[in-house]
Amino acid sequence: PDGLAIPVQLIELWNNERTRPLIHFGLLVTVLSIWCSVVGPSDMYNREDSAETSGTEGSGDIAPGVEANGEPSPRQVAEGVLTSPDSTFQERHAAAQTYLDSLAKPVGSLGTLEEWAARLSALQR
Image (cartoon, rainbow, N blue to C red; front, side, top):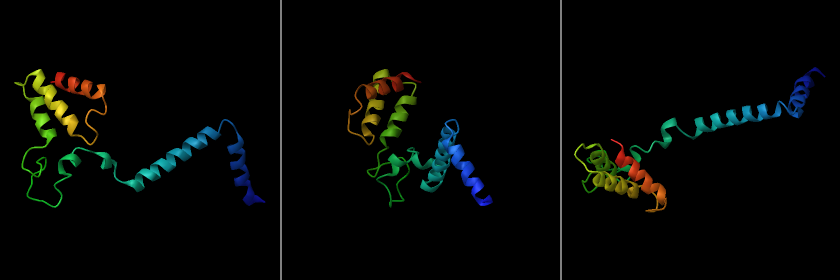
């Protein structure tokens, strides 16, 4: 009889309308933290180097940020133009648009959002 006291108390907590959301939240946080620790490291979704090295695996003589044909990646070209103090708005906008078009998505698929992202990046110094 004493061994059944804990499960009975848990059932009473579960049936209480005030504590059930707290139990749901606690279970959600626990499952989410276990999931994140099993799936991978926290920098798993960091795209900083993934686009630049995606086509160059196995070729150790190519520098990071340089594509297989020896040219700089679209990201590095855009960074160079966007940070240059001598570049015009049109050059910065074109570089940002070229970089957005090089991302892994259909060109122009985000519509107005892509145009605004290019404008905002060209306006920032």
